[in-house]
Length: 339
Figure 1 (tube, rainbow, N blue to C red):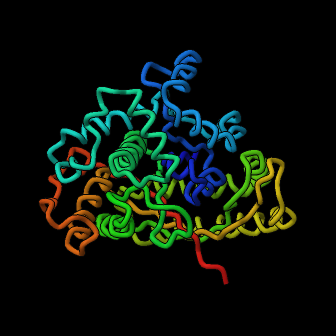
Figure 2: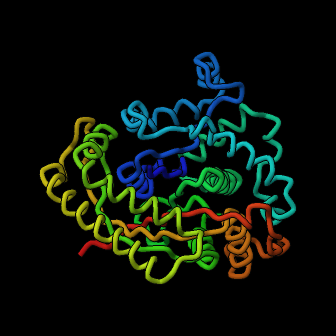
């Protein structure tokens, strides 16, 4: 089974990494913000009163409700809640010496005010992640969750056509973070695939069903190649795996074109205009602490070129974290230019 961890920022903005994951994966796992007391009906109702932005966030995710109901999207994996990792990352990063350069951006004071923390997190999700005090811990938590469970996790590529990087340490440093991250890992395979760039959850659910015969071998090829990526392989084995993915991708791409033709540039059942995009997917092996290390590197560069206040102390290179020895398999998704 191909399970992909999806950053909730991508899901909220319906960015290409989320749209691609919701079609290509058997199951997508994301962090669903929940009230600090729990996720019972009473807890949710209370949060909707005390945290105004929480209601707006839930409304913004309504488009994907069919995918949640059918199990294509979930916040749990093997009983583990991804949101627990987000809360844990916010707490540990605020005191971790390896994250010291990021401490001025984190919201340590909110950790004892959970309602306020939930409200501000939801606000940042709705805005697309301009606050590194939220987007960096969330991105790091999704990597940690994926690494622990052996899942893949999606990223925005530097030439992505929509939205902002959720791993940026500041608005102007998005591409700096991505450049720094590229230096930390190695590429496993590269693939170009057509996906829906805009559609309702119902349309995605129907397309998943229509393309199941072609998606199944593609998912298996991606999953098995990614699982073997952290282990030493011969050149012949790597080439055979890449050839298998390309062949499965070509069959899927042809089926996608056959099915999607009459749907494009029309409003679907929920009034959403259906559009498609060809995305470039780069599978890369990264250290599980890549978010922290690349964010710190981006801070150094941003101060040097004047994107951040030069008067602030220069960020030191992050020390190695416990996650540094672990690997996370990422799928970096970006839109290919139209011809």
